[in-house]
Amino acid sequence: MSAPRRWLMKSEPDVFSIDDLARLETGGWDGVRNYQARNFMRDMAVGDKVLFYHSNAAPSGVAGTAEVCRAAYPDPTQFDRGDAHYDPKASPEEPIWLQVDLRFVSKFARLVPLDELRGMPALADMMLFHRPRLSVQPVSAAHWRIIAKRGG
Image (cartoon, rainbow, N blue to C red; front, side, top):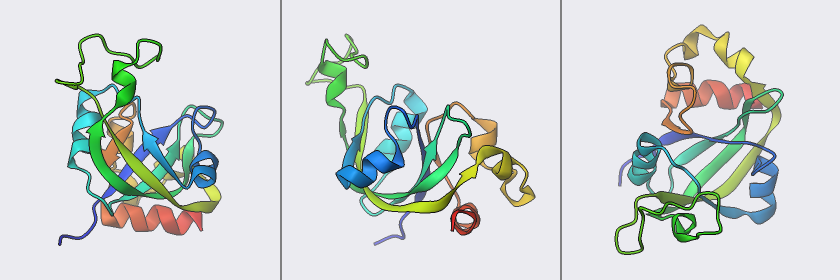
């Protein structure tokens, strides 16, 4: 069995926050509508580690950690005409969009804000700074350790 991979996943805290995941203990990561982010989720395996990032917040930053507890499967919101993430091109026979399920692991003692992350030379090559709109992205083990240490 290979070592778990590491990821950063973004959510707006007023939509779904680290506290929401903690309350639920597990939750589906639905609504991703970017092909590259979908492909990253397709590559996820049970046990992979996730940095939970609060986006479009004041301030934005890494709020805690989670773990993939169910590998990628069709996102049911793509089939629901009443859902904001409905996709008329998708069908149960030919789904387009995927989701994974996450299990809450920890909330950081403090949010690690984006400005602080940007100011750290050791993180300069993170995808977070080069593809800022991508909601799911890989993270190196070294970057993971630095951010987790900052979060306490």
